[in-house]
Length: 192
Image (cartoon, rainbow, N blue to C red):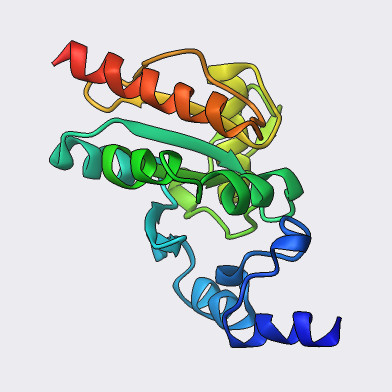
């Protein structure tokens, strides 16, 4: 058992415990970089994919790449989010759709990085002044989707910022999630 846990130190995956430990990019070293860069931290890598940490950056990248955006409302402390990333996103068919057809915006609703003063707006939804990045994404999720669950996925056209299909919550069934992504991609292609 100890040998199995030791593989994690050398880059191995602990699939038997998927979702319980934090993801590798949330290691001590990543946290240091995140806190040094604060709001300037634009992306991170997950499963070899570039993940945008800011909605506006993802929209801009998607317009350039001519791809739709998958908004991933997630949380650092979200076990089901890690299970999706580690157990579903890596699966054949799903991985290719995510990596090749979409720009991913992972919006962490529990992110504690302070918002710049000029972005600290009052939230009608949260009924308080938003001071953290996480509060900004929480407000966005509630205002636009009337949801507060994570994970929560919405596929949108970056040109119109309209939905491509019905958003989904936690979807551990690989075929169902793959069909969700494929449907969004086909809708996007049909709107060009």
